[in-house]
Length: 258
Image (cartoon, rainbow, N blue to C red; front, side):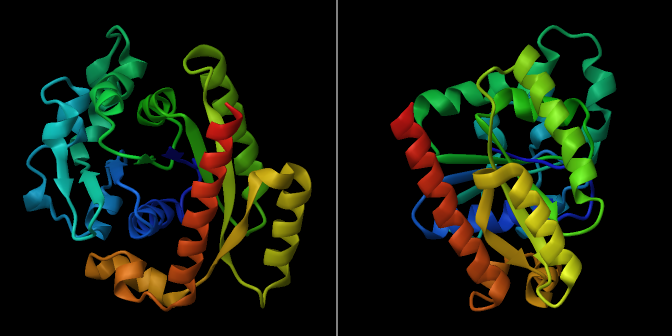
């Protein structure tokens, strides 16, 4: 599942980290792939630069298999493929190579066959580049974090266009798993208005769970911990646990309908 939004600052990486942790907490086996050259998901899970011996860069360049780049995190049931600043040069380095948009999909194939993980989450960079295209070409579904602010719908329209393009040319099976409203402030009427607009436009695609603005969630990455480990009882952590249950339920319904 791709966690994507080309707009920065919407809680994308925070959602990838904490949803992965919450899924692991409810008994799922989860792999988080950090596909952002900034490496914030890796840092947020306490995997420092010195520990990143083999990264997603090595995998996409064909130098290492994905399993060799997989490292355990401090969260039981949650593994990580870390990022590297070299990822920013992947688009140029792959150039016009055959199947350049399928590098991640090809690398994931042995894991699909082995059934090592019940969920693979891919944290994308805040841009629509080759890394994001690789993620969408490899995934079954997209989860879209959407900040409750004025320009939210404008950015979402562009992302939906990209998903349609990927579906039409690279991955016809790609679905939108859901839209998650983030940074919701119930004291702010604008948050309520944006949430209402998104729900009226996209209906049941929008998750019932809303992620509130929460200081403890914002503090957690600086300690190299998911919010659920840093402060399980805070409102943000509890919201991500509810989101995990909702994601699992949707996946079960989708599989039953298939």
